[in-house]
Length: 314
Image 1 (tube, rainbow, N blue to C red):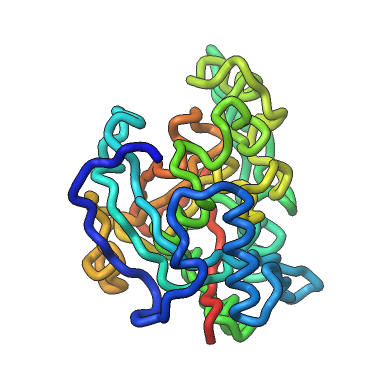
Image 2 (cartoon, rainbow, N blue to C red; image 1 turned 90 degrees about the vertical axis):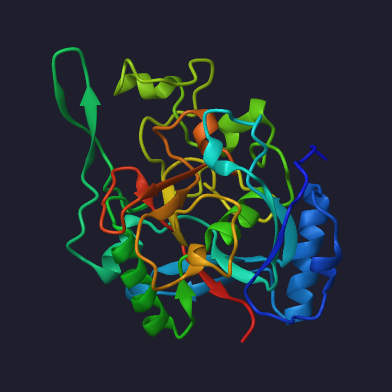
C-alpha cells in the first residue's frame, strides 16, 4: 500500500456503535474480487440484493447499488498531485454503515419529473474569433447540469417524499469511499485505461475547445457529457464516478484533515459545498478519486450535477 504520512486520525460516519461486520473487518486497500465479496456480504447481512431499482413517476426508474461499510484513508499524499494541496493530510475514515448509492448521475429526464422547466442548455464552443452555442447538454439520458446545491437538496427531499426512502446527497467521505471501491491509487482503474472508465478532457474535446488543456493521446468519443452509464463501472458497479460531470456532496468545503463531527458535516453551516469527480472538461488529475472543488450553494455550473444516496439500514 502507498505510504501515507503519520498521524492519521480516526473519525466515524453514519450510525454510531454499529457492531463490527465482515465489511468493516477487512483491511484496505483491497482488490476488485475483495470489493465484490464485501458488497455481497453486506447485502447478505441486510437480507437484500446488492442492487435495487426505485420507481419514479412517469414510468422512470432509479438504479441503486449497495456500498458496504468499511475504513479507508481519505485524501491523497502531497506527492500524488502537488497542484492540489487541499487533499492533504490523508485521514483514516470509517464508514460505519452500508448505504445505497445511485449507479449513475441523475439524468435530465429524471430531474425533469421534479422540475419540468429545467434547462441544462448547451456547451459553448471556443474558436479563435468567436464563442457560441455548441453541443446540447439537454439529452434525456445525459446527466443534469446547471443545478445548484440547493436545487439538488430540494430534489432529494422530493425524491424522499415520492419514494418513502430517505434520499440525500452523499457526504464527501461517502463519495470518495464509493468511488475508490477499495483502491488507494489516483483512480479506481489503471491510469492507462482511464479513457475506458471516464469521460474526461481528451482528444475529443478539441472539437469544441481547440486550445483547451487535455490528454491528446486518448479519445473517449465524447466531446461533452455522455449518456450516463456508457463507461465501465468500478468494482461496486458505480459508473461515471470519474468524469462526465462533477457531483455535489453534502459537505462544507473546509481544509483537511476531514472530521465528520465538526463543521465539515454541519447541516447549519454556511459556505461553499464540495463537488467531486471532475467532468468531461477536466484533465486526468482533476478526475482523481481524491480531487475536490467547491462552489457556493446557489451556483449553477455547466459541468456540475449530482447523484443520490440513502441509508441501507432502517
